[in-house]
Amino acid sequence: MIPAKFSYTRADSADDAIALLARHGDDAKLLAGGHSLLPLMKLRLATPAVLVDIGSLRDLSYIRDAGDHVAIGGLTRHHDVEHSDVLGEHVPLLREAAGHVGDPQVRHRGTLAGSLAHGDPASDLPAVVLALGGTIVARGPGGERTIAASEFFQGFLETALAPDELITEVRIRKTDGAGWAFEKFNRRAQDWAIVGVAAIAGDDPGVALVNMGSTPVRAVTVEQRIRAGASAAEAAEAADNGTDPPSDLNATPEFRRHLARVLTRRALTRAMQGAAQ
Amino acid sequence: MPSESEDVTVAIVVNGEPTTNTVEARTLLVHYLREVVGLTGTNIGCDTTSCGACTVLLDGESVKSCTVLAAQADGHEVTTIEGLARGDTFHPMQEAFREHHGLQCGYCTPGMVMAAVSLAQERGSLTEAEVRIGLEGNLCRCTGYHNIVKAVVAGSAAMNAEASK
Image (tube, rainbow over all chains, first blue to last red; front, top):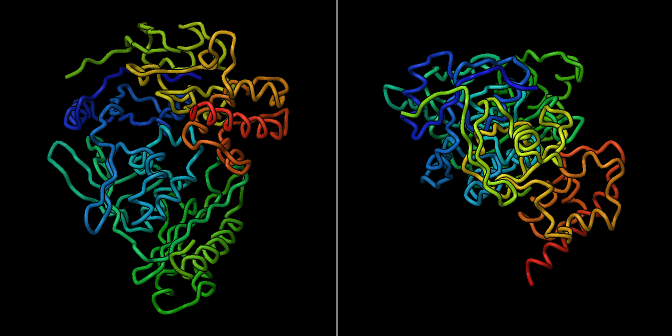
């Protein structure tokens, strides 16, 4: 399978990429690792006229301790997230979840920001960043703006990112000392989650679900119950509240609701036991 | 501002040899290797980033060459299965696959070996559990994986021993 024809251009800087996007509008797509976009293009589900390759913007590949949060550059690959000592110390949930994306070859190419920009509700990291209350930094022709993860995912493969914007950074508040867990249910090792759960316990709990609707879903009722002092089992009973899970050959919506409750109970049980995993 | 084109000229070092060619921008790295450079050791299996048969090393790291554009490899180094042996001497991972009979039909083998080399370069000597998790991106429909896992455990130990000489 070969993508439809397109024009290829390589951006030399983030501003260069933004200028190219501004010129081509909806016809252009950014290419970072390409591990969401190229499979879609090979299936001709996406046929952009212009690809703007930002893969050589290495100055956007970094993971930095930024005081109260960790700053992750827009071109940082899953592999780098998975092996980051800074994240291991301050946001271990993200580091752990990154190691569940695809397989090692995919993680050598795919990027955190690319996964967020793609906005697939079946991807692991959008839900993880949502549970962690992350912030997405987007740069466009008018400069930079920040978007809360809770505002970012708007529909199936739709995000708050404008066509001429580029994610330059993802910011995640440190979760030092808070318990956490990531649960992913699938049939084959490298597959997307049939359902997944990212959970962070502590004073400011966060729980978000993978593949339980057209966007990653924050389990608001579960979080409220935890804050009110509920046990993991009591809180997890509400895990499928407000979700609209899809039906496919792997699972019915009813099975997904069941999985969400069970996986959330498991995740919360581990997370509420403390930071030790 | 850079130019845009449906054709791109790429300069890719393949197995230590510089190659320069003008190809369609949509050319996938696996097609570049097989059809332009003429190295057919890299196989196309599923063509959907699942099976790993097309795994090569890009700047030393395993990637699925069916999901990388040749244009993305411009200015970089690629190693294929043909680039592992030194003359008539197998790479330690190749030798381990031979010794432990880590294949049956052989179709997945080039990708398995390249994924295993990358894994062993990153992590050193591998345990059985590490191999089973680390090869999650490579499918084999013949062997049931047992001899492949044995081969990669042995091959990673041999690579580690060679590296520490």
